[in-house]
Amino acid sequence: MAHVNDPAVIRRLLSTPGRWAVVGLSNNPLRPAVGVSLFLQQELGMEIIPVSLKGDDVHGAKGYTELALIPGHIDVVDCFVNSAKVGAVVDQAIAVGAGAVWLQLGVIDEAAAQRAAAAGLDVVMDTCPKIEAAIVDL
Image 1 (cartoon, helix red, strand yellow):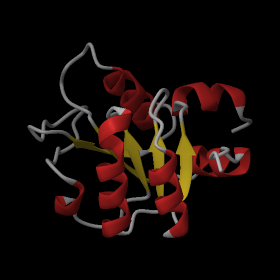
Image 2 (image 1 turned 90 degrees about the horizontal axis):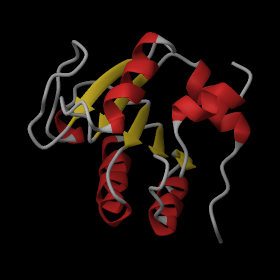
Image 3 (image 1 turned 45 degrees about the horizontal axis):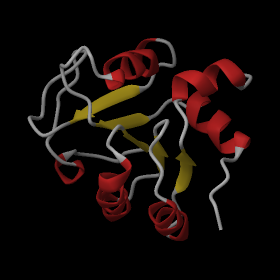
Image 4 (image 1 turned 120 degrees about the vertical axis):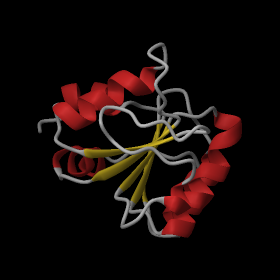
């Protein structure tokens, strides 16, 4: 069965201050993760945690190379990786006890979404927080 995003979950995730691990966030200004994470941080008041292969610090936030290295609870794992790789990121999010996974626009993995939901995580797939924030009443 195809995942359907729940508007109430989207509204709650975007309106509740939280810690967002942004996987795929580096200092490459050409990547969409840079602007979206800045929006999360500055417009929505979220704490962002960059996660990338190099572990770049971004927007004044300490970067990490993997979710398991991040101290403390992660509320949302925001996935800026391609669909073929996102399943592994979702599995890591489940393993660290994250509260939710957000698969960005164009990132689709139905099996990973089902695994996350079965593990009790909220799931948002194939959309962007910046787009959704303009649609939902925050």
